[in-house]
Figure 1 (tube, rainbow, N blue to C red):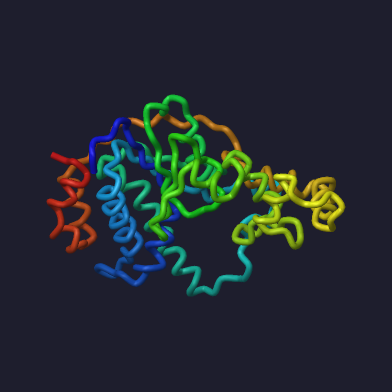
Figure 2: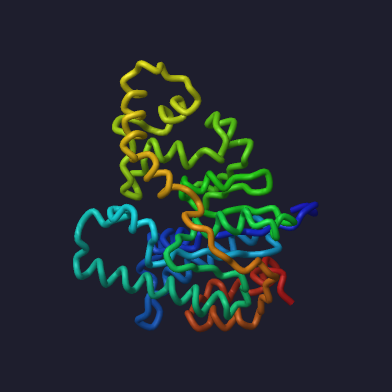
Length: 290
């Protein structure tokens, strides 16, 4: 990678990386302890570090509590009851989420670890990206949630850890024909099945964009349904749910990390991550540790 003109901060949706790791390495066990989420998460950090060589890392985590459920109880509600075995698997996985956030990342020397009661990682990402104290940094947001498109700026792009594809402000505007700044409204109209948020019946993102851009006939049935949804408060409620951040809160500004090679080796050894130990020198180079 050539020399950059500006500093780079990598801002990560950690729950996203953890869920990816869980789906791929869920059965990985050491000494009767599940370590698949930890292994997969650290492996992805190594890959991201190698690809982007960031100057700062920021780790954003979901809160268990959600303010959004206060205005829409069905938000991200489970569609079915979990079996006792599934509940146990959830516990084993989420224990690793907590261990990464509370113990492993701080031990490695990462300083910018964010979680705030009632908010999601996406909310914290939006706050960090828009914080004027970070204007000296270009930002790359790592995550897969489509709502994150609304945080795109000239100095902020997105990167999907699944598709390995990046999205820029200009690229998004060219593809969809609207500014990222109105993406919350497009999603408010079309809804989000993954989060259990119903939109206007029969209206997907493409149709919502056409409506927003005035490309639909005012007399059409679709326009009528959208206007009825607006009058009934559905779109206003959805916009509140989709908007990032949901609530503005204070987050400490990002600071320089103090990564410690010895601590990396100790963590690898503690969880018996032999492949990482064999690559220890590569980790040292990727994370620019002495």
